[in-house]
Length: 335
Image (tube, rainbow, N blue to C red; front, side):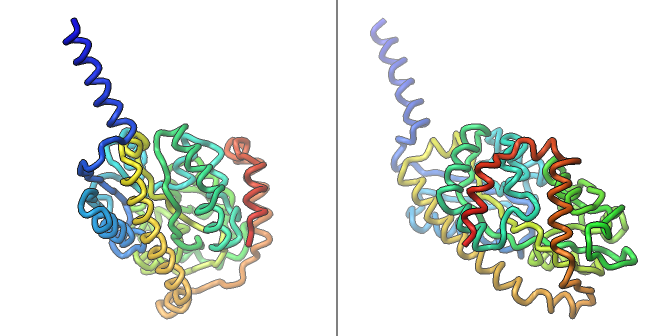
């Protein structure tokens, strides 16, 4: 009997060590999956993270990187991270909102005034509180925020320039397949058309979709401009992705291992943000030189008013869950 009790205690001890991260010195191999294409800054940042964390941990942590949807589709990897089938992915507010509804406001149209505002919020105390709340409710833990760029409207030849939300009536705008993304499409005045990122180029080429919204670096790297005609600079979302880990996997790490990961992600974040900020600075001219008609002066005020009304009416099923007190905190954080 004593022997049996001892065995049970040893088993409990081993389990507790795994769950509380007391496995110092054990090697950790992480899988990091993304649907992003090789030239995207956040794809390259995956390798910056890999190199840095392997270096500072002296090989105690290794990372296997899978980009371009090698393992999962964009929606598939969101389910995989919750199940723990993969250790890390890039998530974002519109995806996480399916488990934690209020965070959809972080990906809402015109929530952030610009890069500095977003970065201050999402890498500061507000961001940390949000990430911890997500970990408690969704079994996944965002670790920081990488800047993707500011989202603009890129449209194929629809026969007109888009300057107001009314010009978007009937436009089939590709969005990822989640309720929050669909609400965003409506907030821009469009007809949201859900589809995977990997399908967008052909959809634009064939007319299955009339347009899509992404930051300009993504438009360039994915070559969407090749099958488009109009770029409208709406600046409607300061876009970001969150390097996110399965929460059980995160809690299995030691404090030292966690710190190595955070340190390496910060280096990757700085690389990603600078790369996209530098790219945006010259991309308007790039698109013009490639035959794109750029509308630099759309009616932003009209888009903002339309979006606010859309969230409060046709997408009130989304905005009813927003944390308006937190939203006001975010607005007060404008630099």
